[in-house]
Length: 591
Image (tube, rainbow, N blue to C red):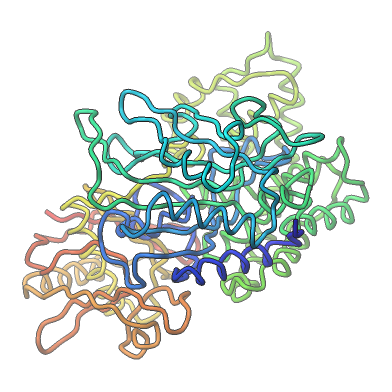
C-alpha cells in the first residue's frame, strides 16, 4: 500500500484519476453560497452543483470532479476531539445523468486499490438494506462482489446509515454505498455492521435515483445522478495510520505552533484546547479570506464565535498577548493554492488582531463574573436571565457560557435564555442551532425571479455608487432577496430611490435574459462580473440582460433566471443597513 504523504498528494492523485476517466475539474467554489438560501456555508461539493443536479446543463458536461472547501457549524461544540472539524476539504466526483452505480463503484474501487494501492482485505462496504420506500440495493452489493469484495465484508444497513436526502420534505434522494478502511487491531475482519469501531469511512457514493413527493411516495428520477464525497483530512489520517486528523499536514503545523507559543507539549491534558485552537483559527482564516468580518449576525457571528473560542482556549494554555495571527501564519503556508488566502493576508491578520483585542477584555471580565456566579448558584442549573446577563454585560456568547458551565458541572436554561434574548434583541442563531442545513436550493418561480432582480440590482448599485461595488454575498428566498455589497457609507434616501428607479426602468424595458457558455478568458474579455476562481480555458455560464442595442448586466452565474425582465414585477427596496465593516446590505422584494 502506498503511503499518502499529505493533502496535496491525495488531491492531485484523485483529480488526475478522474480526469483520466473523462471528468472535468470544476473550480473550488466560495464558502458563502451564492444561489442557495438554505445554508449559511457551502457544506459539501454538491452545493455549487445544485441547479445541474436538478437538470440544468453544466457548461463542462456530465462528468465532473473537484476538491471543495467546506464549513459545517453543527458540530462546533464537538471540535476538540480527534476527528471533528469546522473547516475541511471534500473530494468529489459527479455524474449528471451519465454513468450510474456500476461505473461509480468501479471508479472508486480502481482508485483505492490501484492508485492508492490499498489491499482489498483492508476494505469493507455498506449498502442500503431496503424498507417500505425502496428495495434493498442488491445491485451495488453484487457489483462489489464481482470486484472481489467478500460477502462477509458487505453490510446492509438501514436508511439512517445508507440513504441520502431529500434535503427538505421533498426532492431528489437515494441509497448510498459507503467504503470503509480497517483501523482495528490485528488482521482485518467483519464489517461496519458487525464491528463498526474497527472501520473508518473514507468514501461515500450517493445514488440519486428517487424523488420524494409531497404525499410521501418515492418516484424514479428521469435524470439519475452520482454524488460522491471523500474528506481529505480524514482520508489522509486514516491511510497514514494517524491517530487523529490533527496529525496530518493540514493541521499539525498549527498544533506545533501552539506548543511553541504556550511552552506546553501536545498531550492528553492540553490536546483538546490545542485542537480547538488549530481548527478554529484555520477555519477563521479561510472565512476571512472571503472578506467575512466578525459580527453578531449569520456568517460573521460564526466567525466571531470561532475566534473567541480559540482565544479562550489559548488563555487556558497560558498563552499571553495576541497570538491568533501568529498561528494563522501557518495556514498561509499550508494552502499556497488558495489564491484568496494569499491575496487577503493583510486583511486576515488585521481582523484577527482586532477581534482578539476586543475579546481579551471581555474574556477576563466574563471569567471573573462566572467565578463569582458559581458561588451563588443553587443546584446545577444557571437560569436564562443570568445567562443572558453574561452576554449583555460581558459580551459572552451563549455558547461560551454553556461551555464554561459544562466544564464546571452546570447546565444552562437555554429556553429561559432565549426568552430573555427575544425581549432585548434578535441575535442570529441560525448557524448554532442548525437552522440552515445542507440542502438543495429553492428553484421556485419566485426565487427565479428574484435571482434575475439581483443582477439588475447589482448593476444599478454600480451605476449609482460607483465601480468599487462588488458582491459580498446573497441570500434569496421565495419572499425576498438579500444582497451584500462593498461600500463604506450608508446609502442616502436619494441613492436608494435612484437604484429602485433604474431597476424598475430596466424591468419595464422587457429585456431578454440570455445564457451563454464560454471560457473564463472570453467572459473577462466581454466584461462579465463575478468570481474568477475558475481556471483558464474552463467553460462557465454567463447571463446577459440586454436589448438589441444595449447590455444592462453581464454576470457569471449558475442561475436560475427568467427569460425576460417583464416577468419580474415591481422592484422595491425594503431595507438598507450595515452588514459588516465596509459591507452594506439591501433587502428587497418584487411586488
